[in-house]
Amino acid sequence: MKPNTKPANPNFSSGPCTKRPGYSLAALNTDSLGRSHRSSLGKERLEKAITETARLLNLPDGYKVGIVPGSDTGAMEMAMWSLLGQRPVDVFAWESFGSGWGTDVAKQLKLENARTFTGAYGELPDFSQANPDNDTIFTWNGTTSGVKVENADWISDERTGLTICDATSAVFAMELDWKKIDVATFSWQKVLGGEGAHGMLILGPRAVERLESYTPAWPIPKVFSLTSKGKLIDGIFKGATINTPSMLCVEDYLDALNWVDEIGGLSAAVAKSEANLKVLTDFVAENDWIDFLAKTPETTSNTSVCFVLKADEDQVKTIIKLLDNEAVAFDIGAYRDAPAGLRIWCGATVEQADLVALLPWLTWAYQQATA
Image 1 (spheres, rainbow, N blue to C red):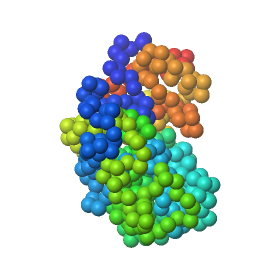
Image 2 (image 1 turned 30 degrees about the horizontal axis):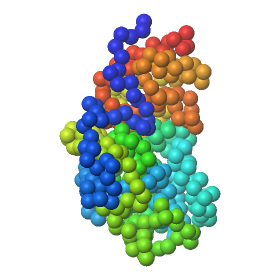
Image 3 (image 1 turned 45 degrees about the vertical axis):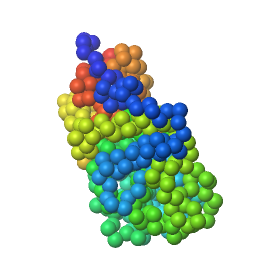
């Protein structure tokens, strides 16, 4: 039987993610629109986005936050182009985006002293291979595999290399061990449901020291430049962006940050995301036709939750189409490079009631597709 109740919000995309509950364009402050981002008002709004990010993430003293172009990809490539080359590099990858960083290191920057350790979809690589004297690149959460790191215990407190972490589908949904992270990147359109095209770059003191003491052998494009005359361009981390940002997107991001504050801050956002995962975990336990792509509970993502089904690829496509046609769940197909299956976003902007309403529809669609 076709279920009667549909999710109030059928947006379960893993990026851009759904807007916060109760979102309305009318709630945005529009005073900065049509103004220069270099005006006193524009700089004030940009600086607020930076300071609120640092406050809500509970960043340690000395960590700097900057708004940069190109979403998370731009932030990661800015970090790699500006920081790598001084030491050998270890790349840990277990899905498509992490593999992309490895490709950048090997084929774009062409670093000779680079190693890549990979894990199959659903699994993590062998972190025991990490050399604390090398720079290390990894994702905290594999957006396309639904697999996250269990913890950062594998990162040495005595390391001499830098750790560069792509945290785009983890920040504001998982507890990150900031003392283990020297560089982190994320984008507004992931966990907080913000708009695209803007990236966030977080630098710890060790990364700043590297920037001010080392110059890469390759030319740095202006849009990637973090230093001038051997010193950090501090304005980037105070709201003086490298290029022109969308102030509408900035206001949208500020609205999302304000919502996180209103629900109780980072801990509340993490708890909400974990409670959402519990809804799906219970469903998987009750049904033998669906399972997590992640091989262990400890590494199962609580944001980009990926599933494999007892169904062939065409049947999976039918399931996705049925749910889309019924306006029950949009954009939940697995990433194109991942095994055929479903991917359901469970970050804090998703309401638990919508997940509960979705589950009978998953069963219905599966039965329709495999009958």
